[in-house]
Amino acid sequence: MTVLPFSATTTEMFMEATLINVFIVPKHKEEEFLTNWHATSAVYRDGGGLIEAHLHRNTGVGNDTFSFINIARWVSADAWRIAHADYVPGEYAVEGVMGHPSIFENIADIYSTVLPANQDRDHWLARQDS
Image 1 (cartoon, rainbow, N blue to C red):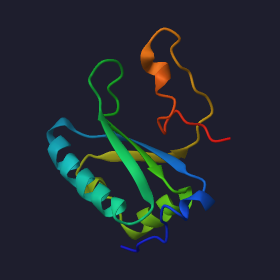
Image 2 (image 1 turned 180 degrees about the vertical axis):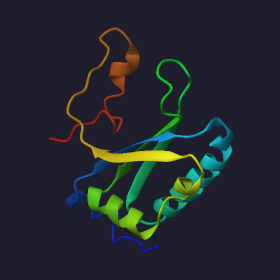
Image 3 (image 1 turned 90 degrees about the vertical axis):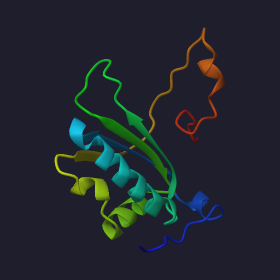
Image 4 (image 1 turned 180 degrees about the horizontal axis):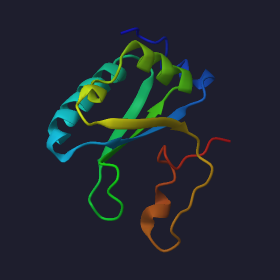
């Protein structure tokens, strides 16, 4: 895999990108999916463009269309495109797995006025650059 020319000192010249990828995964393929997701994440983590990634499993409360949601922060949309052109995520090879990745931008933030959640405004998902 190509190591991208990004570092802590050069990321400030790029506009960070939030990737949200929702996955449909057959129940009997979840372990295989998770193994592949962790392997893919390790490749991207060491490639220079991925800042952080968080995988969430559907709890079954509410809509259960999607089994997993990956929320990741990249140094830029181009870094994500380059990484995915260079290394196809292994989880897509798992039979029955369908991913739906897209880059999103933050447009609004809402915080509780009665619960301590409003204290976490420095979290990267809540932080809005000016």
